[in-house]
Length: 604
Image (cartoon, rainbow, N blue to C red; front, side, top):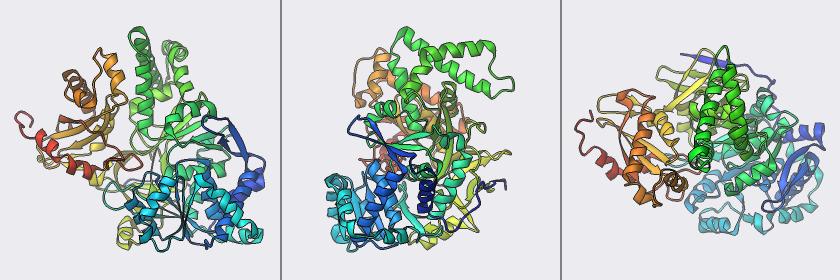
């Protein structure tokens, strides 16, 4: 059974909490900038020093104490990614309480389940609309004493209410938690079944942040390190990064609306980004479309090929040759520089997680000067557990284990994780906890490989493995990720369990469709019309053929069904973290799947 351990870089401290990290940062860097806060839509960024942030947090924590929040009480935050989230998060910890994030897109039923299962005492929501969602299920939540609305002055209300609470009480509360104590309960997105409450401790965050600040120091701990958070803070990835920034000294910014992402990147100028692969696919595809037609498009595609070739050459003993280096300089002047500018002009690194990025895009971005460090982690591992590092990168893998982390792959190809960042259990689910945590190891449910250098490749989820009628085991993730890279494609679900061959459901990207049609000399058309257009279908068939190059014939996609409905969170086919709810798709589109196999002659 292959196994690899990355040694710890920091001696564990069982007494340390997230509040310890903030107190230590205050001692060493009180006047340093912890965050920059945007003033108004598209406004300038105002620096917030560590001392100012701590004062804000303590004032809010006093308010929490004043309204009756006790140590260990659960406090929900339902809000987009904005500065106030981080204020409230640290205030909850400073008051000795436990934060429970709720996606701002959650339904009333999801709110009811999370709030009741976790035992929420207070809900802090962003808008009156969010408050209305909570109100729908308020009668089912007898423990919920109050709902405060951020856009209706919740923070000012807390500060005012807490004016009579002493500093001594906040000092006492802020040191109550130790490493083993509960810091947060994060409910998994729930691609199958009801979301499980993942209980993460202060020690999970502290150990990962302290090791990460050193192990990823070139990315997150330089004096110039800064990152703009735009992923949901209800997700463990962004939530961990806000804690990591406190430890590493990086400056954080927040942007709640991804429709303003490019202007916000341009004004904030982050040095590193966090994103899911779909963001990188969109940036590439949008850039190609903006190149237009004729010579401009040819130059863009040439520059992209040069970037990929240059990056691949970096992995060879001799490196890029003189001719390739000259081409690379020209491509940079013509195209690559503009692409970096679109990301703010200052980005050196991007950390990608949530799904495989694909080698082609990995090489493309490295070739234009943005090193995408692909990583892997789960809510149960407090986000990252393996990640490529500068100088320790193998494109196509999710990197080696982070410091203090061990990874092993069992005989069935399942990945197991051990380390101080692994969760303590699922809330109120002892059987599921016992199944997931075995002898100090976490059974991830993911399938992959581990090479001799400790680099992990993810090939799929054990629960998603498709077994064809011929007995062939097929991991759908590789095919789905490759096909989703085409500009026309929004989502892909590979099917074929107990069927004679592999097929796929494909949805079209409504944003990219008009530009693609124009580039190919086709008239404007809506998604249903495009889904039946012969030239669109031919382009998708060519994309399928390219995706199939990565697998054997028995694993290849033979037929596709192009759906006229995209998968979204609103229609119940995507989780808030943009993962496809496979079971819901298979159930809802069963007729379309059946149609793939109506006439199977010649498909065996």
